[in-house]
Amino acid sequence: MNKSLDEKLRKKIEQIKVLILDVDGVLTDGRIIIDDLGNETKNFNVRDGHGLKLLMRYGVDVILLTGRSSKVVEHRAEELGINEVYQGAKDKVKVLEGVLRERGISGNKIAFIGDDIVDVPVFRKVGFSVAVPDAAVDAKKAADYITEKGGGRGAVREICEIILRAQGKWGEIAARYDLDI
Image (cartoon, rainbow, N blue to C red):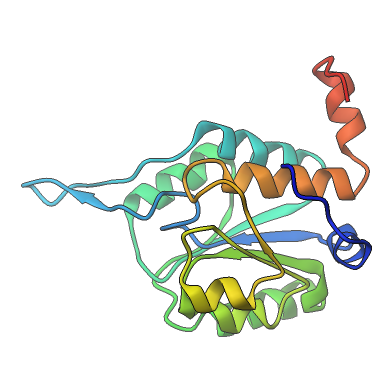
């Protein structure tokens, strides 16, 4: 996390109450491995998972929103304690609008991490939009921030830490783990 945030972006991040994540290409490196029996596997980064757990512990809800459907995603969400998972979402904006209605909040309270052109309409409706470095060109152009780390390789952890730091919660985490900050 060598990038410094400008004041305008920091103010946006301070308001975040919910982090919504695409899965393939964000929580994973985008590869889908299917064996001869049709079993699907994905690779997840353990530090991304710990970052999400920290984020939830400090009051930011996490939602998974993906266009594909996979049992692997269900298992990972359960393991992390993520209760809201939307799979097979052909219209991610429609799902986002439902989340906003259900929670009674505006889009500026939402951060979203995506990696492809299907995520751009969501980027335009949230307070903090994030793309990974190997995202589609148009997704990167539309994002407020591009992570240094790749999808499935620490991008999610990077954003979790950025949110926690901007919201003034990192000091408590640092104290808990006896970190020098």
